[in-house]
Length: 207
Image (cartoon, rainbow, N blue to C red; front, side):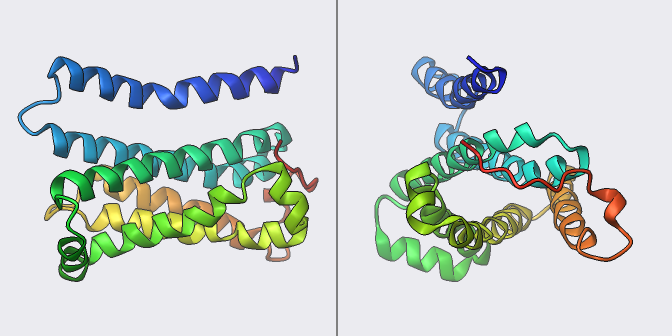
């Protein structure tokens, strides 16, 4: 087995750990006074972390020349969708009591929820087309164009988190800063004279 194949297995297993721990703590009654809010916040945070990590793969690969990082991009993206879908399911099921009208009213009343919805909806086609079979069916060029929507999902998710709550925390600001760096890097490397920021020029298709 190649080293990156084992590393993918490690990422696969560890990506599920937060969800397993959340389920275990729930079964033991360790989620505090408001377990629903804790679960909603935790799954949302994990979705954001995995989404930002997936966005960081290409910039880090280009900057360092570590082409093997591309093997983890799709897995990180899929985990981002899984946690985001659970995040929405918990919110809709417990906070909105499966009331669609209540959900729509909340989206209208609280814009940050709208950005969260946008992020999740954008991730749906990205997740569906994340397999090797879909890459072949769409063609590499069309697949890459479609998956540029990852940045739309990332920006929407960060805005969703940044707008949450009345007080802006250092963690919220940190996510904004990281996203600006990742997007800024992609812009800079397109400008003549900034080639020194890009060590890798070899396109890699994740497996």
